Length: 159
Image (cartoon, rainbow, N blue to C red; front, side):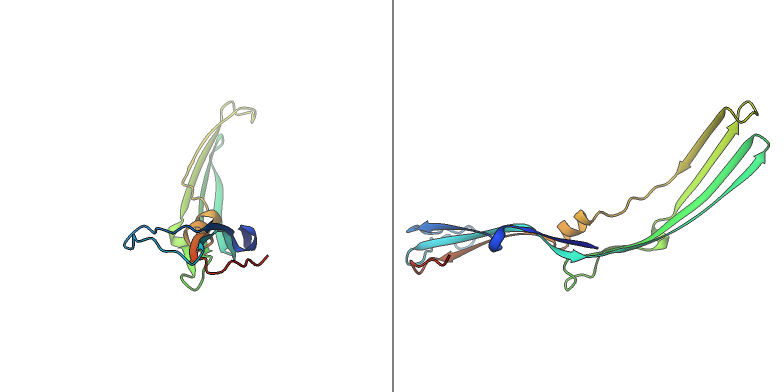
């Protein structure tokens, strides 16, 4: 489970631009303003709660193919589901079935002197990493940055 709420306090910072017009970029390039100017509300942060599941299966066996040589063979697979932080848009940010993460492993060891005191070995495998929640959080709804502009129509401010 991953639960996070890190953002500006009070839903953001407010910047007041007294007696100034706001000039938006894009299609509407004409300055706009309220009676007394405008204000801007900036909010940036990370918010959300999610949890994922991962099931792993690992099989390995070890054989002595010669009195001084051993062979190890293994197979690992995982079933990983990392959900998004906004489930109403997309339930799973990333989903991998057992067939997507098959990792074969092979190893061999040789008792060089036959006394069990000097061993030479080598191994090879294919590895898959887990999907970090930071990727899901940043790409699927946990990270946000909003900037809102409003006309300043009153001289009264609420504390």
